[in-house]
Every structure is written in C-alpha cells, then in structure tokens.
Length: 237
Image 1: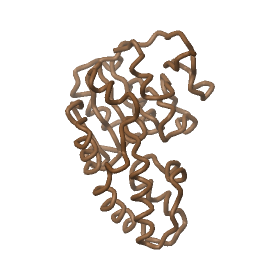
Image 2: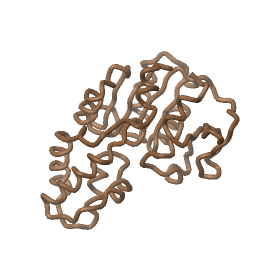
Image 3: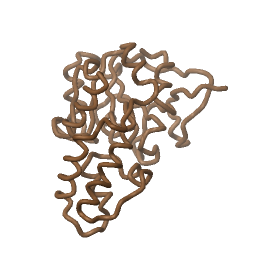
Image 4: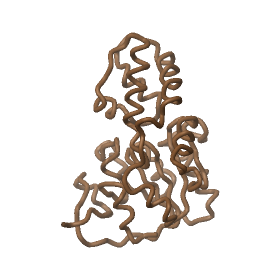
C-alpha cells in the first residue's frame, strides 16, 4: 500500500496525496509546531469546556463535531463561533470557558499518533507557536512531559502577535541562527500556513487536524502529509 508522503504543490488539487516515491525536499534542521490538531488532539476537553461555559450562560450546546469546526485562530474565536447569534456577552462566556478549560485541559487530551516518537527522536531543533493561551498550553506540555523538547514556546498571550501575523515566527527564527530554508512550520490550519509564508519559511499542512486545506487559500502550504506520524518517514532531518 502506498505511503502518504509530502509533495510540493500537492495543494493544487486540494487533496492529501498518496504516492510511493519521495520528492525532493530541502533538509530541515528546525521545526516550528502548532499545538491543537497538530501535536495534540485537544477536542475532547475543548468541547466539554465550551458546552459547560455555554450552559452557565443559558446558551445552547453543540456537538463535538460542531465544536471541532469552530476551532481556529484562538480561544476567543472558538467561543465567538460557539455563541453564534445567541444574545450573551462574549467576554463573560470566554472568561467562564477559560476558568473551566484551564482546570480541565488534560482530562481528554492526548498526543497525536507519532508525536511522542518524533519528539523523543529529536530529529531537529524545535519550537512551539500556538494561539492557545499560555496557562492551558503549559499545563498540557507539563502533563505529558513535552516542555523539555522546545527551545521556545510562544502562546496567544505571550507571542508579539497571534498567527497568522508573522511576528511570533520572526521572533523564533531570529533566535535560531539557522537559515530560513532549513526551517519548517508544521500545522493543521490556515494561520500556520499564512504566518509561515509571511515570515519567509516553508510550511507543511497536516490533513487530519482541525483545519481544512481549502481554508488556506490563497496562501497554500509547500508540503502536505495526511497525518503527523508520516513526518517520521520523511528523510528531511
């Protein structure tokens, strides 16, 4: 059975390719990773916290799949989409959500398959750039013992600007001392791809996260893989 591999330009058909031959890719010595949908499946805890916050404000609940479709561009946007047109104060629901989620962000969260193996192999130097707030981010990293793998961790409230702005990327890149052509952003949604492009580095889209490849247009990734574990097979490190 063919193995899903990274292919430059595969986004032209907006599908995750399955081919059996590697194409030429530049060697990468530094990776910047997204968190939700890339390193971790956080949907279980996110959905429970969203619905608990909505219930406290008498707003209607959503299915887990509906909440999955609301994920992207940070926690405030997650709550904004979850509220929809319901007449309730956005900030109040957000504050309730953050209180609940920050206490319960590791109950139903787990690393994506292949993530522990990749991190342990230390195939390259690594940083984390997420729009997620810092408190749950560091609690998740600490819970799974992953903090030690990242030279830099920038969150939605600690980065100079949130993705897709390039500022967080630029800050990380400036600390590496590594040429941009050796740096790769790995993520599952449009802010990852757009931010990497604006910062002048290559990006890789993971197809089984929370984002959709068509949402990246008009800025598309340099490479695509179907799932994180495929990264272990790529001879680019």
